[in-house]
Length: 146
Ligand code: CA2
Image (cartoon, rainbow, N blue to C red; front, top):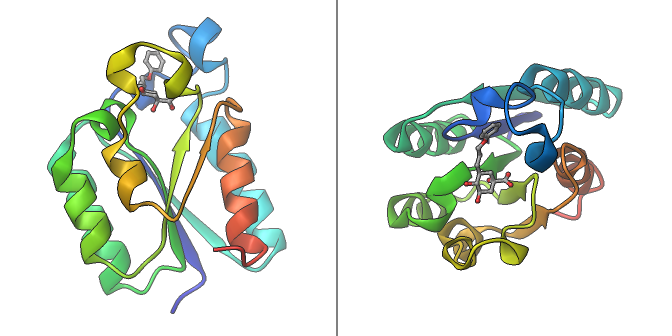
């Protein structure tokens, strides 16, 4: 196993900090990546932060995380969270633990966000803390809870 933690981000999260700050906050994905890198390196881990708008790319990255022996994956699959059986199958097909991450709390939002296929496979879910959700999720990995 390596000391790398993949942080995978799905559709539209490239717009973070640039649109709808009232829902998702004003940090960009690069701001979050910088903080996660500091937090991880202080504990002897490395972060590999990625974003894609394509569902199959997330599936490929989950397979890659497994093949390369990543320590864990933090996954904010965006709207694919609520639709993607392919992501659930991928999470179940790999042995790397996957932590589901959300900025908002989807369970308090529209009904169509209440189902999480990602959550059905994830070892843990951290949601509703804005950008801090990523840091909380990472700390669980660092602390060995996961
Ligand atoms: O709260 C989260 O992290 C979500 O995964 C965000 C997704 C949403 O579909 C999920 O239900 C919950 C949406 C990401 C869209 O990101 C944007 C960022 C800035 C401006 C517009 C969209």
